[in-house]
Length: 95
Image (cartoon, rainbow, N blue to C red; front, side):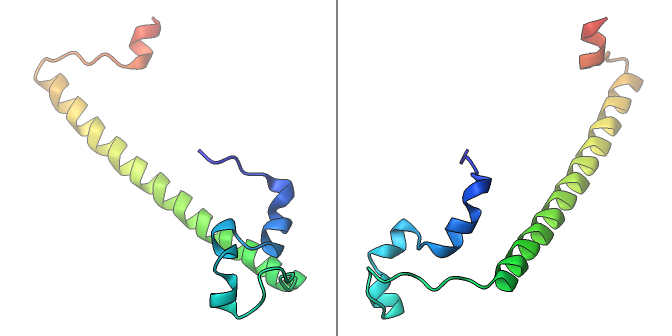
């Protein structure tokens, strides 16, 4: 998993990714050693707000998916118990 450095998010905006530096002259028609133009505060705010909205929607979808899986698992557990199969849950192990 990649470590996220919250303090360097601003720097990420003002630096080109390592893989793009070699191709910066071909893609952007600017010299590789020139400084990238800084992003305005409003654009950066919009970027972060958009990222948060996207991540919030992804998290909500993941929660919905987990709830559906849990519901299906409970239905299988209920049916197995109706058939006489004892299901040992993590709560049962602690007792």
